Image (tube, rainbow, N blue to C red; front, side, top):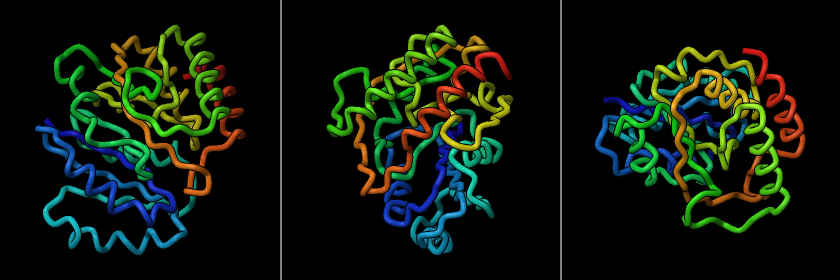
Length: 233
């Protein structure tokens, strides 16, 4: 059993090595590979990749670089294409999500009960950094709207932590280049009638001063994607 951890990276010089360390230290019993997809970083992140063999000797890490910045959706599309694992998980590079929670994210799939697992920031009693109210409200609104079109009862459609059996995600053609990838993938999973589970996760959200990238404009585009991908493959 091989787990592929797909990490889209854009301007994460300050956190790149730390997230790789945390992923490699995650207490899981399956083999793992890390697929780093750099979406044309401009902050010095690119200079870090040649040091990876020295920093993480023996680790199964591959780096793919985009020549032009395209967005998170494009980075995930590339990462999923490159992933060799039986199970594939999305991991952001910004330390908002904790790889120590991989065991509970993987459990429903390893137990044979689920095909897809979402890690929900709004379910369960795990710790959360208290942050933007309007950002929280926007997430809940987008999840509700998505649920209306997909007939799923998710609590956190926009979460980074999505885990897939390879049979689920490999055939999906991802069209969205930016953050519209979240509602797009959710709509296509719902259409495929896969078994979807949620587990509660902790969340250590960043402020915009600390590098958070998603804005209200991405929320507006997500609304379009929710409606569009409810009807278009």
